[in-house]
Length: 481
Image (cartoon, rainbow, N blue to C red; front, side, top):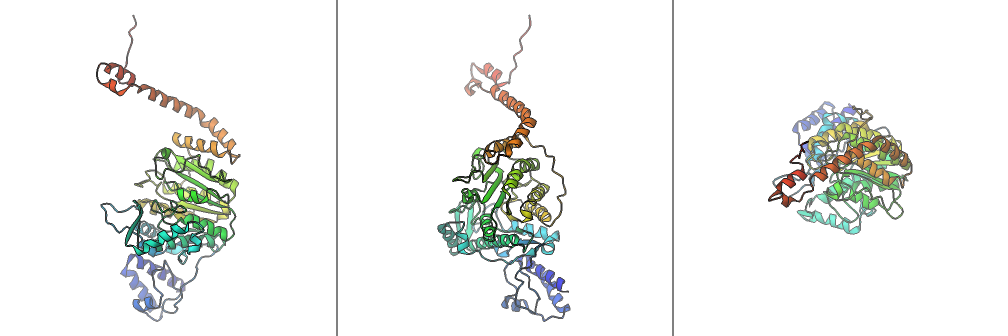
């Protein structure tokens, strides 16, 4: 009965999010059947036993005012969530809802509940607000104060796409606090690994600027929290489709944190425009920033796994992190309206599994972007299943990259082998295996470009025939005499 009590109390806390009266009734009858003192909802809230404070579980409903301080153990997967983060939303009503909206967390939570994962196989940690002192380890005082100022304003914007309401500062503090505490719990062994189901996201937030839907940099806060707990080397792998310019800025001069990002770049024409392969770190920390910038959209599982096999894992293994963080944006997922890429839930699961071998399994996954509700819920569920010990269902070991993906990987290897010499042999091997394919492809593109060199004004007037001939629209055949 005690186990059932704990489970029902979690479901009751969930119903505070969804407003499900059936769950409230179930909790009431559970109290009656167990012979415990029945308290009304008003009495429970008055005694502080039911409050908007995350998926908090009361130990014995009707018997104790205290909530369980921490239910994680060294063989469990911890999840960080607090429903007050749902209060962060855009006030101004527009024709289309903002992509970074509360439904993102609701969709993931519903998927986890349906799968029996959370509540069930994972355990919650109590939420707390990050302190100003902790935030100032990452951000400037001016930035912290600017975010806090929004709590006095009904609606405000940091940038045209980065909104805030009166609850946003609290949501950002809770998100950062959960990430910090998850990092500490995992590194200290109180939890095996963890997933931070948080918003607003964070990887665009720099030292002194909120942007790209991000207010505080959750991954950076978690990295420093793990170091406070004793980690000497921290790896952050960012697979969000957008470059984590904020995380790169925070750590670009720090050799104790290795930042690796895989993202759409397209020559700087894809938001936020940073993250070129030649951005490698500075001030003695060159090589501790690794950017894998895709040159186009539509990138799928094969290119990501290929990059993991030949760039991410070789560098990460040599770095030998004590703690690993994934900035898990699911906007590279198939169907995402902003990312327009093609990574599947199996692809995300495989990447998680590949990173799980590092740091003795001390792995924290932090939600970043992802705006297709079906894609983020299925992808996040697949990732958490790997954290729980399940093997990815699909084998993606022998991946053939696209030509554009291969070109990107070779470009990154040529730059990063200056800092990680073991990559030189990988580059040589790949060039010998794939070099002829790239040369042939390059010749085809050159021929195509040479066909269309006629000036456009020639299309009309006396030089029309010459224009069509040079552009390939007209073929000239000579007659043999």
